[in-house]
Image (cartoon, rainbow, N blue to C red):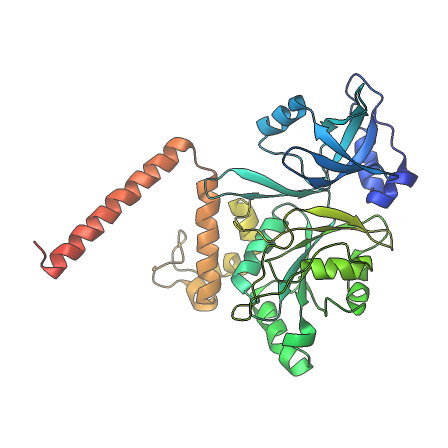
Length: 362
């Protein structure tokens, strides 16, 4: 059983539910250990905070191997057990199972952790040229597949949509395409009113993570919530409103009101770690319409009498098919992926041969 000092660690985002969860975990041999939270993860070290002091630490090779065997790695927000060695260097002896965990996949299907033990994901999207509903759907799939509550935060309202007449169409686009239960907040990320608008998700002991593309205003919003300059910010390009990766690593910050916020860099590869069931829940409008398709096994592509194609916008349906293909590919074995690649190669060769014949080439 792990000893938890709730009053001290509450400042680091320890909730009663998490405290009860941690107390029930078996403590490794060789204690006593200090319970702390990961605030930053670097290549060879991590930063940890025990509610009183923040320090650098290293992860024991044994712990790294165990996490690698579980297809994961240390993530900002993790709760860990620390112990100094004879030289005073601090080591992570165990990573405790998280209550929530957001992970993404690379193009090859490998899984990478994003954050752990967060209550709410604030998906930040600018109202300028950063506004992209396909990318928003991907972030929603990434978050909801992990069991974390998403909230959409539209930034740069003061510049891109300063009046209700300009803001209303953007909000309507989201309502027409997403679930009515999704919370959507428009803010000026540089103004203190942003903290007031997000207060319902920043209660004492709660942890939120800011996610979104580079240049969306995540670091600016972090500074506003913290009431101090804790993250570097940068300008965006004029022609597409995209920003450089000013934030290069994830970091956890304590807010004056008792909540914690994790700032994250923009994800270069935004591939959600989801399955078909999660996608069906996220795109529940497609599932409802599918009941009215002419064919029971309708794929909603080119079949006649497809109620989904008639009732769902082309862009949303195309995004759904793309996410579904990725989810199915992630569940394939190596042999199945090789067979699929071989089939695509044969199909491509046949298409090129047909085009050559059509042009009359010799």
